[in-house]
Image 1 (cartoon, rainbow, N blue to C red):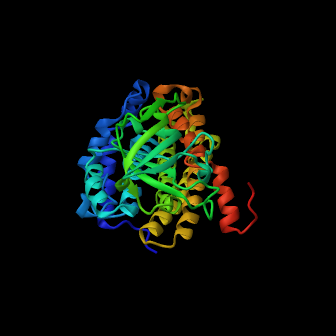
Image 2: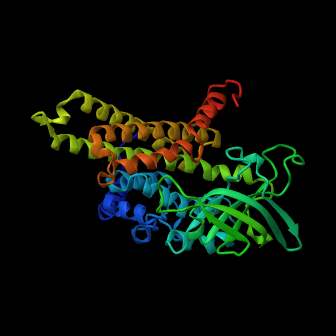
Image 3: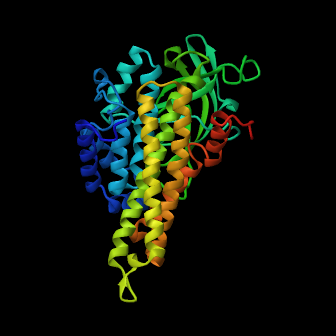
Length: 392
């Protein structure tokens, strides 16, 4: 095992750090307050070729992997962006790019991947439904064959970024759960070009992360050609795992990078803030929680890098799923603890928006709940790694 970055990986980290300095906490504060999409940031990522790190060169990418994307996102988050950069890249690029790269045919790859990696087209994933939630196998959005087309009807919820997207990866059933040999069979993925009048989006007011909006979707007689099928008919559950595992890893990166930013910012404040004649950082009640949080962030980072390397090395999907869930759990727990103790170090000032830490604390809370809850990652670890009975 080599824990040193390669020359290329160091260059990627340096480039990401430079971008983060140009789009620091004040930039994200303004975007959050105005609820406006960070298009300048996204265009800077495209110009620096960060969006295409994991895409082969023949489709406009850099021919590297998820590991390099993780390295870039960690620096973007830790050097000024908080959770934001990981979410922007995950939703705007990764959802579509990985799904199409892994399971698209050559025509689909050539059509969409260069647009996505260049930043000219953003993506979204239509997965979650009001009556299914985490239980993806219970989704009811249905794609019915009709001549040379499929006609799709259903509802989705908590679909982020769809109003800004040019393409939606839509998860449907093509065979009902009752008629499928196994519950995991009968799901299919479709590439849906946007905007489309048959897809109605309604914004959901949120606690935070308002620089990228989240929507309810109503899908009413959406007609797509059979060529829009992504991968094999009925194998959508197995296909989508190739996207959901990176999603868990990237959410962990956001939590770890955002937590690191919070701890380093609080440590600087603790050196400068003088109370009772000395910097508050001399007090172990301030120093120890920040030091412990930083140590846990570094441990979690090892787990998420391991998950990314395994993914890039095409290790078996079970092992990748195991480590991805562990990384998600560890990264989010570390990020929550880090932002909490950072707020404590700031005292009353930590509650003020001008110091940013309250925003970082709010943002990392999303990772407790999405893409799956912390409890569901523990269910996975207990059942699929430790071999205990199913607990839900």
